[in-house]
Image (cartoon, rainbow, N blue to C red; front, side, top):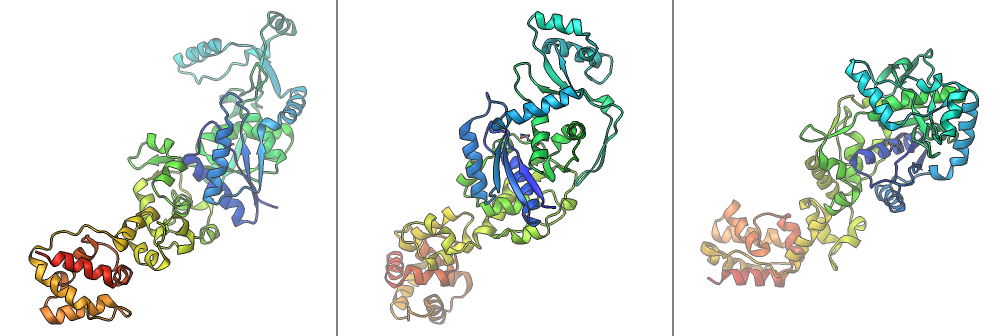
Length: 445
Ligand code: GLU
């Protein structure tokens, strides 16, 4: 059996971390098993769907490296939905209902007021042919409900949540089609999963009730249902569903200097029993990806954790992967030297400035004589070897300084900063002439 998964976003906005996570897990599950990953654009809602969001979703998935094996689009499949709808209707699985939204609201209010679950009372099913004809003659167009089978137990073993049971009698027959003929999400999704051979539906736990209803739709169509994995939702670091999380899209993350591998590394493991590890290559993450590792508690997404994973990814990035994003002229040796100090690739610009100059060094103060001596020594050492070692060894001998008093004034004078990349790696890049000039300018009292 070829594993087939699908990511089914509605193009009513851009992707945020929550649905990126869903996309990633669908992709991983399929790829780990040599299967296929589909992108299904759920654009039945013509009013809210926008082409620019379809483009953005494609671009975001591509940036993350989640390449779909095929793309499907619900708006192109309405003839198919129509055909299945007619079959199900002829078989008595679908019925017309005529209530207005206000009327349904009122019914629900009354039930709630009595402490009862607001389940649709199936009044439309009780209509006689004459009553229906009269309503239609009055110009009332029906919407359509899927008739749940109250006698059939609803049960499945969720790959994350374990055994699930629902009682159809406690659920409203879902509206599947509006009076204007447009489709709601529920039935087209089940038809697509069937037609596209989807073997595993991976989605957020906000869809658990939909799954209960869709299982009955698969049964009505006479086909087996796919397996389901419903993931606990993401929450913000502060424990509540954070507003920022919902708006945290790929654009914002990319602007913050977050690498796709950092997002993949974090979201692959977040909410599982496995440690989050920075992986440049997703292969090791695929190898042990399993829904069995996922917990049922909401997973906490923490932007600081993402930033930390990102830094550890940046520290591994080879020059070739970043060359086109580095300041003009910055070479591989400089990248290697500064990489361990970066949180983002963009941070390399600061160190390129330090190498190239000019830099702003703090006043030498009490260290002026020491730096004058350093400038003199710098003129004598072999710059082709390990100039930092040569410089500091000579200065140690000459001055008796060691530790911080030996190193820090040099770092300050040479880089204008108290901290930074390893000076042994940095100094050859700064080079003899610039280094001497910086030590000289500092030695002027
Ligand atoms: N378009 C639906 C959503 O974005 C898809 C849900 C599903 O995966 O079936 O929620």
